[in-house]
Amino acid sequence: MKLRKATMEDYDQIMSILKDGSNQLAEQGIDQWQGDYPNADVVKQDIENGWAILAQSDDDQTVGYVAVVDGPDESYAKMKGKWLIDTDKYVVLHRVAVHSKHTGHGYASKLFVAVLDYIKEHRTDIETIRIDTHIDNKIMQHLITKHGFKKVGEVYGYYRPDEVLYVYAQLTK
Image (cartoon, rainbow, N blue to C red; front, side):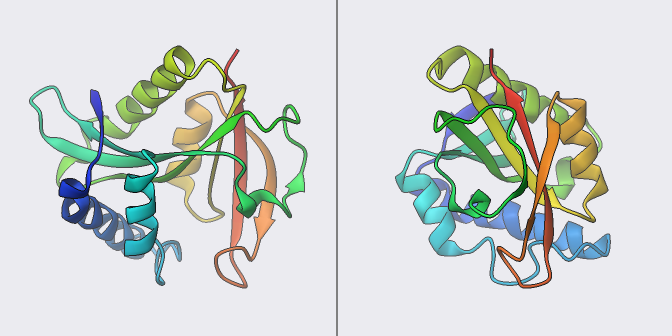
């Protein structure tokens, strides 16, 4: 798995991956990414800030997307729970998606490994990595804990009034 920073030339491909992710969630009956999120403005912001990362298979096929967003992240301001450590030196993994035509090959796990390794090796200022997912997204919850994250809390109603997100964190050192 190779990672590369996305540019505005990748915008349409990123939107396609995220729309496909939204469709996958809908097919599973998960009410995540079913409204106006993630949207064009969020993706453009990811790209402009250097947060947008494309995941490529060994044969150079683009298979997935993740945004590695520098903290602070206001979505956690009202988290019910306790962080592993209290720090401003963190990044958040947002908008993790593997396109459905590439599922079933372990790419989601490979994406996690590649991103976590990259952060730990190249972002030595970072003390912790954070991520969240919808309460009903059991597949993502499994991936998150499989890759060493600990559940640290919950966020209520940030994206939509009745939505509950589980929040996870992992120390980098």
